[in-house]
Image (cartoon, rainbow, N blue to C red):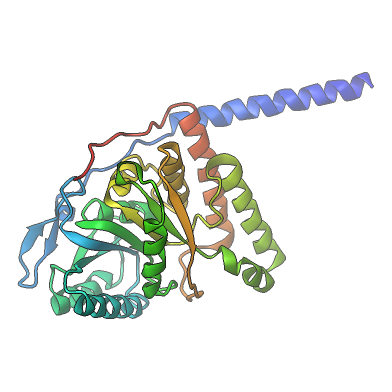
Amino acid sequence: MDFLFEVVQALVALAALGFIVVLIIAHVTAGMVNLTRHEKEKYFLTATGEKELFPSLQDPHSRELSVVIPAYNEELRMPVMLDEATEYLESRQKQHPSFTYEIIVVDDGSKDKTTEVALRYSRKYGADKVRVLTLVKNRGKGGAVRMGTLSSRGKVILMADADGATKFCDVEKVEAGLNNLNPKPENMAISCGSRAHLEQDSVAQRSMFRTFLMYGFHFLVWFLCVRGIKDTQCGFKLFTREAALKTFSSLHVERWAFDVELLYIAQCFKIPIAEVAVNWTEIEGSKLVPFWSWLQMGRDLIFIRLRYFTRAWKLQSPHKTD
């Protein structure tokens, strides 16, 4: 019995030491919020090929809706999504002439012709409606979404994936979810598209190993960061301008787990969040590598929690946008 007790003591001490080591690593490797831009990232091209300065999220809104589309090597998949989005938005504008919009395609350091493809839409619809922000180097999806959001003019800002996995007309569903949130402190609110209602069907099509990874990730999200949201990773989220400024100004994670930190920040600031079921279809060509991407996201979740716990990361409080 004494030997068993000593073994248990040793294991507890080892676990405590391991936790302290991870805590120290998380703290000393914590990067700060990176809002700096390369000089080339401050401008977009007009229809005549002239450079024009992007606006700031700190400015008052001048459009009803901004659509931010992060894109990395998406020359093949993006045209389908952009065709669907522009067709919907143009039709909506014809029905309601007071409705105004913009699309910001953020090329996240692509190696293909993503920028050239996006610029074709800018020339077709005009740079007032479709703008292209080309990042000098790859930041990750979270970094691309943030750079596009900080350059937007919309009263509300939609984050949408370039693969078109979510039907674009479902923007009406997340808009309804946003409008139904009451009260909105300082006009801050977020509406998240959700695939949670499709989970049982997806489990039936996945291997047992991938299902285990999925449930493990969901548990870590719930245990460490965000509670009350079943699907944090759907790339279809709508923010009021004020909520976008508040959350993206504090965002540190720039890769796959950025959605979780974004919602963690929102819940820390007590920003109301709606979760709305949307139509979603698996599109071939995903950049996620099942095992390694889930492993990276799991590590990021642990580090998110630890870095806020040790105060290596702190929540920012930007000025309110009019």
